[in-house]
Length: 170
Image (cartoon, rainbow, N blue to C red; front, side, top):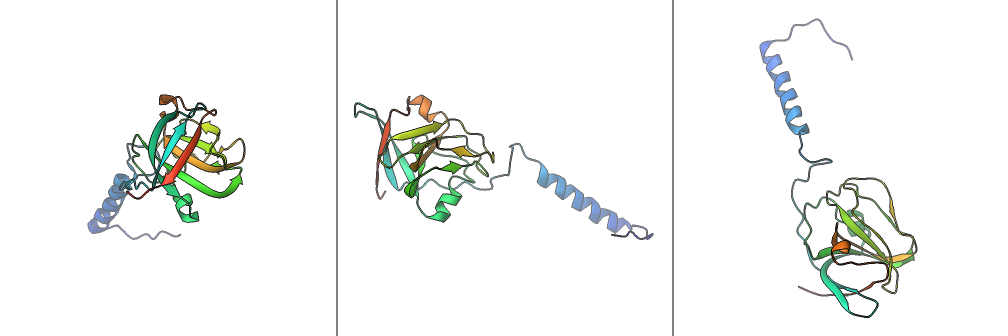
């Protein structure tokens, strides 16, 4: 790029100043990570129960179900909220080692990896929003349930528990 020796006119200065001010205004944010312009409404597709080893129900939540490649790639990215008793369940065709990340996800989550029998494989608590670090299952999982951070502590959900779920129209 070359600069000329031409003088900048008052109109030119105004245009440059306006451009700089608009860039400064766009870069300010009170939140870390990318801004989320609008919230995506929670859409329950079914219910999920957390079950103790004695078969008692710990709690029930509404779930959005992510089955397609597109829905799974989107996950809870760009969400600003999630109901206290709501979550997202990812369904894979068969059990496999699973990995997730928090890119473009502003909510801290508890991520629960579940095998094909509904038994909890492992729980990763209080994930870091916007992180690109991988969050891994410790064994093959066919289902992954994402809930608000602190949910598993609040209800004392552990790897000894399991889940059952069903699709429902609401």
